[in-house]
Image (cartoon, rainbow over all chains, first blue to last red; front, top):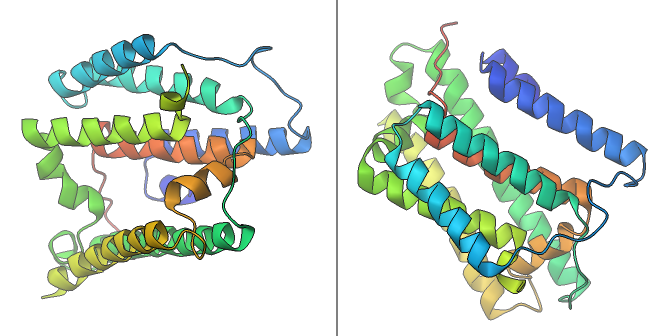
Length: 172
Length: 72
């Protein structure tokens, strides 16, 4: 993924992916012994809602590609990275075979989407009228995200998905 | 025509994803729902950080970064 981003000239994305890969490699080599915080972080729900709501407001109101947008994304990135680094609590699990089937199914779907998108991108830059004939997801979503309604919907869904991933709703 | 096929490809993948999740919620003993599967795989710090980073990059890429088209 990092090399693909480097090949297509998105140097910021490529740097982020290379840095993340290096960080995870170091974590594997040190067998997960690197810790950022000594105690598990538990954010009060009011704080989570206030911060998320403020960020949503910035991401919707601030002009797209502006410095305010950039600061909000960097803030979100650093915060979720710090939270994701901490160990996850124990929970009840479904049967192992059901988890494996689900993991395989979603992995196939994710890989299929990435391959379809990569194929569309390669054909869009190597064939005549490629951008029109082989639209990438970015090209398809751009007009939607440019509109206010689309931006509100995208930011809302994206932040809600992030909160679900961090499972902040299950904490106090 | 070609554009329609490409867009249909994206739509098919999304529909299969929705179908998978609906089936998983009806038969969680056969296929675990997405949330429970993610909770399981995210017990590993490497996977957890990887998935969270992928989520962040998705927002960054579509809501902030310029769409890049190179000429080959």
